[in-house]
Amino acid sequence: MRSQTMFSPRQVSSCLLAAVLLSGVQAALAQNIKPGLWENKMQPQLSPERQAMMAEAQKQMSAMPAEQRKMIQDMMDKQGISADIGSGLVTMKVCITPEQAALNELPIDDKGKCQYQIQRHGKQIQSQFTCSDPQISGESSATINSAESYSSTMRATTLMNGKSEAMTMTGQGRWLGTDCGGIAPMKSGKAKG
Image 1 (cartoon, rainbow, N blue to C red):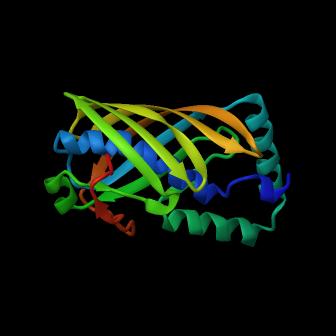
Image 2 (image 1 turned 90 degrees about the vertical axis):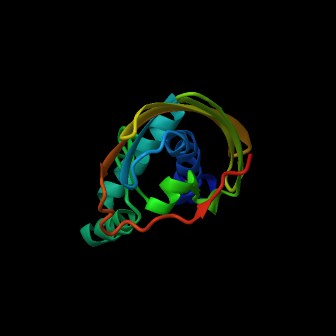
Protein backbone atom coordinates (compact mmCIF):
# COMPACT_ATOMS: atom_id res chain seq x y z
CA MET A 1 0.00 0.00 0.00
CA ARG A 2 1.46 3.41 -0.95
CA SER A 3 0.90 5.97 1.78
CA GLN A 4 0.72 8.89 -0.66
CA THR A 5 -2.38 7.41 -2.34
CA MET A 6 -4.52 7.32 0.79
CA PHE A 7 -5.90 10.01 3.03
CA SER A 8 -4.76 9.80 6.62
CA PRO A 9 -7.27 8.21 9.00
CA ARG A 10 -7.51 11.58 10.79
CA GLN A 11 -8.38 13.43 7.55
CA VAL A 12 -11.07 10.94 6.60
CA SER A 13 -12.43 10.64 10.13
CA SER A 14 -12.50 14.45 10.45
CA CYS A 15 -14.62 14.81 7.32
CA LEU A 16 -16.83 11.86 8.17
CA LEU A 17 -17.18 13.06 11.74
CA ALA A 18 -18.16 16.51 10.51
CA ALA A 19 -20.80 14.98 8.25
CA VAL A 20 -22.13 12.55 10.84
CA LEU A 21 -22.06 15.14 13.60
CA LEU A 22 -23.79 17.52 11.28
CA SER A 23 -26.57 15.06 10.58
CA GLY A 24 -26.76 13.55 14.03
CA VAL A 25 -25.77 16.08 16.62
CA GLN A 26 -27.27 19.06 14.76
CA ALA A 27 -30.51 17.11 14.53
CA ALA A 28 -30.34 16.25 18.18
CA LEU A 29 -29.58 19.84 19.11
CA ALA A 30 -32.70 20.92 17.25
CA GLN A 31 -34.59 18.70 19.71
CA ASN A 32 -32.75 19.98 22.82
CA ILE A 33 -30.42 17.08 23.43
CA LYS A 34 -28.71 16.61 26.73
CA PRO A 35 -25.27 18.12 27.19
CA GLY A 36 -22.44 15.80 28.07
CA LEU A 37 -20.64 12.87 26.50
CA TRP A 38 -22.07 11.35 23.32
CA GLU A 39 -20.95 8.15 21.61
CA ASN A 40 -21.28 8.06 17.82
CA LYS A 41 -20.89 4.72 16.05
CA MET A 42 -20.40 4.88 12.29
CA GLN A 43 -20.44 1.79 10.07
CA PRO A 44 -19.40 2.20 6.43
CA GLN A 45 -20.53 -0.15 3.70
CA LEU A 46 -17.20 -0.82 2.01
CA SER A 47 -16.56 -1.63 -1.63
CA PRO A 48 -14.53 -4.80 -2.34
CA GLU A 49 -11.54 -2.58 -3.23
CA ARG A 50 -11.83 -0.68 0.05
CA GLN A 51 -12.27 -3.95 1.99
CA ALA A 52 -8.99 -5.17 0.48
CA MET A 53 -7.27 -1.92 1.49
CA MET A 54 -8.62 -2.25 5.04
CA ALA A 55 -7.40 -5.86 5.23
CA GLU A 56 -3.94 -4.71 4.11
CA ALA A 57 -3.97 -1.90 6.70
CA GLN A 58 -4.98 -4.39 9.40
CA LYS A 59 -2.15 -6.69 8.32
CA GLN A 60 0.35 -3.80 8.48
CA MET A 61 -0.97 -2.72 11.89
CA SER A 62 -0.56 -6.27 13.21
CA ALA A 63 3.06 -6.30 12.00
CA MET A 64 3.93 -3.10 13.90
CA PRO A 65 5.90 -3.34 17.13
CA ALA A 66 3.60 -3.38 20.18
CA GLU A 67 4.83 0.02 21.40
CA GLN A 68 4.04 1.62 18.02
CA ARG A 69 0.51 0.13 18.02
CA LYS A 70 0.03 1.40 21.59
CA MET A 71 1.20 4.89 20.61
CA ILE A 72 -1.36 5.01 17.77
CA GLN A 73 -4.11 3.67 20.02
CA ASP A 74 -3.26 6.20 22.75
CA MET A 75 -3.37 9.04 20.22
CA MET A 76 -6.81 7.90 19.01
CA ASP A 77 -8.06 7.44 22.60
CA LYS A 78 -7.14 11.03 23.46
CA GLN A 79 -9.35 12.17 20.58
CA GLY A 80 -12.20 9.88 21.64
CA ILE A 81 -11.81 7.66 18.57
CA SER A 82 -11.67 3.90 18.28
CA ALA A 83 -11.67 2.01 15.01
CA ASP A 84 -12.02 -1.61 14.02
CA ILE A 85 -9.87 -1.70 10.90
CA GLY A 86 -11.29 -5.07 9.86
CA SER A 87 -14.96 -4.04 9.82
CA GLY A 88 -14.50 -0.29 9.33
CA LEU A 89 -16.59 0.50 12.43
CA VAL A 90 -15.56 3.86 13.89
CA THR A 91 -16.66 4.91 17.36
CA MET A 92 -16.16 8.52 18.37
CA LYS A 93 -16.93 10.23 21.63
CA VAL A 94 -17.94 13.88 21.47
CA CYS A 95 -18.48 16.33 24.31
CA ILE A 96 -21.44 18.71 24.00
CA THR A 97 -21.22 21.59 26.47
CA PRO A 98 -24.32 22.89 28.27
CA GLU A 99 -23.83 26.16 26.36
CA GLN A 100 -23.77 24.36 22.98
CA ALA A 101 -26.91 22.41 23.86
CA ALA A 102 -28.70 25.55 25.14
CA LEU A 103 -27.74 27.62 22.09
CA ASN A 104 -28.42 24.83 19.57
CA GLU A 105 -24.88 25.25 18.28
CA LEU A 106 -23.09 22.49 16.45
CA PRO A 107 -19.60 21.60 17.63
CA ILE A 108 -17.59 21.70 14.42
CA ASP A 109 -14.43 19.81 13.51
CA ASP A 110 -13.13 22.24 10.90
CA LYS A 111 -10.13 20.18 9.78
CA GLY A 112 -12.02 19.03 6.68
CA LYS A 113 -12.67 22.58 5.43
CA CYS A 114 -16.36 21.82 4.92
CA GLN A 115 -19.42 23.80 3.84
CA TYR A 116 -22.91 22.65 4.89
CA GLN A 117 -26.54 23.20 3.93
CA ILE A 118 -29.15 22.02 6.44
CA GLN A 119 -32.92 21.56 6.24
CA ARG A 120 -35.04 20.57 9.23
CA HIS A 121 -38.38 18.80 9.07
CA GLY A 122 -39.52 17.93 12.60
CA LYS A 123 -37.36 15.06 13.84
CA GLN A 124 -35.71 14.66 10.42
CA ILE A 125 -32.60 16.64 9.49
CA GLN A 126 -31.32 16.62 5.91
CA SER A 127 -27.91 18.06 5.10
CA GLN A 128 -25.58 18.42 2.15
CA PHE A 129 -21.86 18.95 2.58
CA THR A 130 -18.72 19.58 0.57
CA CYS A 131 -15.22 19.27 2.03
CA SER A 132 -11.96 20.19 0.35
CA ASP A 133 -9.36 18.42 2.50
CA PRO A 134 -9.83 15.60 1.68
CA GLN A 135 -12.20 16.07 -1.24
CA ILE A 136 -15.53 14.58 -0.21
CA SER A 137 -19.13 15.62 -0.77
CA GLY A 138 -22.49 14.10 -0.06
CA GLU A 139 -25.68 14.19 1.91
CA SER A 140 -26.84 12.91 5.25
CA SER A 141 -30.10 12.31 7.02
CA ALA A 142 -30.72 11.92 10.73
CA THR A 143 -33.70 10.95 12.82
CA ILE A 144 -33.95 12.02 16.44
CA ASN A 145 -35.26 9.14 18.50
CA SER A 146 -35.11 11.03 21.83
CA ALA A 147 -33.02 13.60 23.67
CA GLU A 148 -30.57 10.74 24.26
CA SER A 149 -30.32 9.02 20.86
CA TYR A 150 -30.39 9.45 17.09
CA SER A 151 -29.77 7.40 13.95
CA SER A 152 -28.24 8.64 10.71
CA THR A 153 -27.31 7.70 7.16
CA MET A 154 -24.69 9.37 5.01
CA ARG A 155 -23.95 8.97 1.31
CA ALA A 156 -20.74 10.53 0.06
CA THR A 157 -18.43 10.63 -2.92
CA THR A 158 -14.71 11.08 -2.44
CA LEU A 159 -11.83 11.48 -4.85
CA MET A 160 -9.17 8.81 -4.35
CA ASN A 161 -6.21 8.43 -6.68
CA GLY A 162 -7.92 10.61 -9.26
CA LYS A 163 -11.16 8.64 -9.39
CA SER A 164 -14.51 9.01 -7.65
CA GLU A 165 -15.52 6.52 -5.02
CA ALA A 166 -18.97 6.33 -3.46
CA MET A 167 -19.60 5.25 0.11
CA THR A 168 -22.55 4.87 2.44
CA MET A 169 -22.36 5.01 6.20
CA THR A 170 -24.96 4.36 8.86
CA GLY A 171 -24.65 5.77 12.33
CA GLN A 172 -26.12 5.63 15.80
CA GLY A 173 -25.59 8.21 18.52
CA ARG A 174 -26.32 7.82 22.20
CA TRP A 175 -25.86 10.00 25.23
CA LEU A 176 -23.48 8.46 27.78
CA GLY A 177 -23.82 10.95 30.63
CA THR A 178 -23.05 14.43 31.86
CA ASP A 179 -19.34 13.85 32.54
CA CYS A 180 -17.17 14.20 29.41
CA GLY A 181 -14.14 12.81 31.23
CA GLY A 182 -10.99 13.61 29.26
CA ILE A 183 -12.83 14.38 26.02
CA ALA A 184 -12.53 18.08 25.27
CA PRO A 185 -15.44 19.82 23.55
CA MET A 186 -14.96 20.88 19.96
CA LYS A 187 -15.20 24.57 19.24
CA SER A 188 -18.67 26.00 18.92
CA GLY A 189 -20.00 27.48 15.74
CA LYS A 190 -23.13 27.50 13.70
CA ALA A 191 -22.92 25.19 10.71
CA LYS A 192 -22.67 27.06 7.45
CA GLY A 193 -25.81 26.67 5.51
